[in-house]
Length: 82
Ligand SMILES: [Zn+2]
Ligand SMILES: [Zn+2]
Image (cartoon, rainbow, N blue to C red):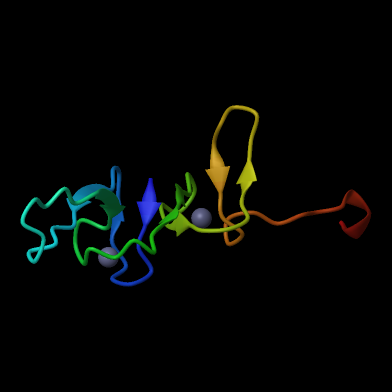
C-alpha cells in the first residue's frame, strides 16, 4: 500500500512511468515509479489501520496476528491506573 502526500491518493501499485526525452532521436527513456494520479514520485509506503480504516504513515502498532492499528485506535493502559 502506498500513499501520495501530493494528492492524498492511496494505491496498491505505483504506476510505471516512462520519461521520454522528445529531443532525443532514439528515446530510451527510463521507467520510474510514480503516483497514478499526479505522477509524483514522492509517495511513501502506508499501512491501513484495522481499527478505523485510516491509512497510517509512520509509527503504528502491529499485533502478532498481523492486525495493525493507528495511534488513534489504541491506548497504553496500566492496571494500577484503574
Ligand atoms: Zn499523487
Ligand atoms: Zn485507526
